[in-house]
Image: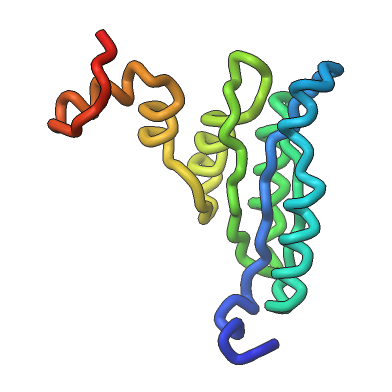
Length: 139
């Protein structure tokens, strides 16, 4: 391991990506992570960091995050959470954040508050208005 990455040796990186269970090719297109997986593979190999790509479905959130938490006997988990989906339409999102928090895992990405205020434009616009952030008229 190169010296600059030695501090990451005690960790395993888990990349969580949403998997939408659909037969709709238009929706499936947006959940094709093949290029991302190639990029992560190349980067983590260069850094010599142990990692794993894990797809997350709405029905597997708890079991997936629980498996990661239980794996920490050997190496501490660092989670890159790419799950930013709209759960009403079946794509994992805020529930993944909730489970990561519940299991007390270290993760990147939005916390519940940020996810909630930015998923819908109305709460985001209200927050902008409340704090004097200029934005387009919307009411």
